[in-house]
Amino acid sequence: MTSTLNAVATATSRTAATDIVSPSIFSRVAARFCARHLDRQVETGASPHPGSALEAHMLRLNSIGHRERLSDELRRRGTVVLCDRVMSLPTTRVNVPAVWDAADLIERVEKRLLAHCGVSPRGTARLRRLLADWNGPLRQRGSGDLCGELRAVLAAL
Image (cartoon, rainbow, N blue to C red; front, side, top):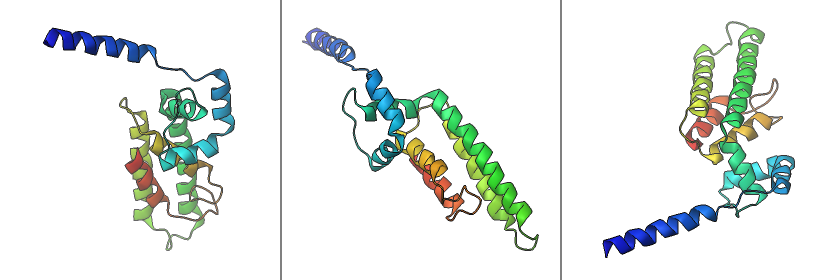
């Protein structure tokens, strides 16, 4: 009886492996053009249909190359924002612990992105939205709490 169950499980896993549908070139192009909209869908927890643009977008969010580019962009923008905060304010108004906390969180998010273990597409989409927000805390005159946003990204990753 156990050999029969093993044979059925093996046959099922073989057919499951062959039923995987790779997104078409049209779906991949659509995922690139509609990335902001798809980021919102991923962040809300939408489940993709096989071969859809959402699936192509989620595959790209999990790719190592895309995570490395996001990590580089976060380091570049985060460093600029933190340097501007330190240099533009008078020394009496600089909140040094907050700057150090933000620098530590940027480094932790970076390490998590570059780790060899998988990351959640929700966290990657949240980071992409943070980087793309024109009024967010990563802009020179943006509003919001950078540490809070980075903590949310880290929790979602």
